[in-house]
Structure formats: C-alpha cells, structure tokens
Length: 189
Image (tube, rainbow, N blue to C red; front, side):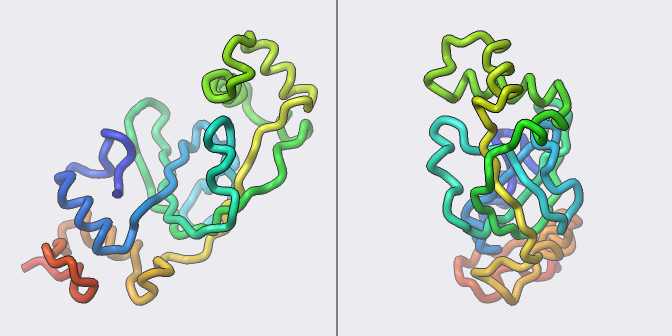
C-alpha cells in the first residue's frame, strides 16, 4: 500500500495503488509523522530515528529489517508524504534524559499522551506524572534507528522504486493488471 489510513498519497484510485504496491514488491511500509518524530529523516536518503516501541509496538521492529519509508510532513490529520527510500530499521538505545531535553515541548506533550494511550500502567496516570518520568529518566522513550540503504527494493533490485513512483504519479507510467513480476510497470500509451 502507498497510502496511510484513509488519507491517500495521491488522488489515484485505491485499487491502482494496491496494484502498484504489489508490482513494486511493497508489502508493508513505515510512515512516521515528522511533527511527532523530530529525528526522522527530513529529506529523502537521510538517516534518522523514530520514536516507536510503546505498548504492543514493543515487540515490533526489534530485529533489523529493510522497509520502505514514507515520511508524513503534514501538520494536521491529512497526509502529505514523501518517499524517503528503503531503510534498515533496528532497535536503538532508548532516548536519554539529555536527548529528551532537546525534544520540542509540543512533541513531548504528544508523546506523553501516546504513552498514556498505549502503555497499560499509564492509563490512569496524569499526563504531568508521565512527563515528569520522562524528564527524570525513570521512563525513557523507545527508539528505532533508520539507516538509508537505497532506492531499490531488496526483493526487486532491478527496479528503481523512487523513479517508478515519480513516473506513476506524473502519469508517465500505468500499472498493468498482470500479477507477473516482469513488465509489471509499463509505459502509458
């Protein structure tokens, strides 16, 4: 899929995006919001970090794995995404007190609310208490390292995904209905 939730990357029909995803070998992706992940890649091809690992997410993204990364740069509930490339994602050290102190206050507030919503032991805690735990270091935000590995999907190394997306959304290529790997993206006629 190449969209997040119900907010699509483009106005292309949903079925076309599903077919494009399958043809490009994309079966899953990461889509962090830049305004909630201040160390997320701010431009395509840059390394970074994202806050993830609370609640049920604690068991996800633990082992290194390569994922396509779309960064949501929208400030509101809409989606304005850019394809940042393929990234090796692996568990990193939790955010230290010194690092936490550099996070903007509005992001800290959002993250404390996310902690309250996702962490069972925090459901009934006041937000100020959760914030104080992060400030003191008794609670540390889990983090994942994002290391850029390229524009090509490891499962389809002969295809430049970035260029295929540019071509698709500019109308220069259309997605064929074929489920075969060969000629799955072809020039529009």
